[in-house]
Length: 422
Image (cartoon, rainbow, N blue to C red):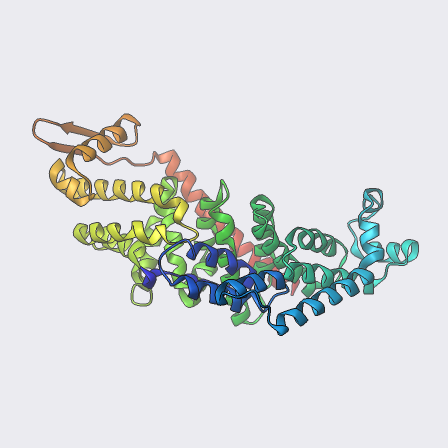
């Protein structure tokens, strides 16, 4: 199943520190040789300031207690630079460590800079030094300190480019700290900044949207409202365009979110369309299951792809926790669509389609009916099941359509707002 591993593709759109968790996860799977995973970690970490971690991996990989001279010198350089930066930011970090001082700051950054210079002799140089100090801490793997300093830098800096860069850095730090609530807030702030920057070069706009969607995977699959947020983001016209042009592999995650989230069946037609359009460019068992079942009504094909989906999700860092929910929802979709066409079918035939034994299939259907998730009748003597399709009420359909319309309106308003600011 290594052929369906997206780690090499995803890594191109992630900060190198965000790739570490993916490699750690692959180390627990049998997709690649363990030595190759460790070598990839070392290659990645050598470009950071996490020297001690690099030493550990090097020694483990080479079966030695020796440390290369290059890493020893690198450690000296990292510590020296850290001390230098600590000295440069000492006035501002001492100011920020006093809560009473922080309360004196206003919303206006220009006023804050004048206030800091007059009262505490803290100028733009110290504020810039805070950015570099935060970045150096991040590269050292001190994500908690980095997140704190980047937050303060954003409240003080008037440099627009570095303010945006610091927000990206804070998102990465929050993800690595598993502070997904804070990361979700910052993801939304980043989206707003990206959406209003409509006069940036097209290539940059596409790149920024692709990065945002990739980074957001860490948040969306670990936040209570994450699946809705993923659908809302990925289904917006300009982001869906970015997926189709640069990141077709993200369709796997969109497909899982839509299949699992039954309250969002209103976007299923859009998902079917884009999966069918991009099938020539990208496909995997998840997207093929969607195409076979919802586009081609190929139940045998859908059954074959569903059998592969379980292993694909089991080996996907972002989707492993959603595996059971996806398999359950996918089986129900397969069941509903099959019954919709055939009206009444034998439980034996259905068990083959669902890759379950007859007894387990009948219990599964009974549980769905008992939980009011299906309107079906089971004739145990005849060994058949008949189901009536459930649909959203007119009121629920109206709410879902209004939700989609609201998102498109927001997308348009952001574009207009960006044009007005330019």
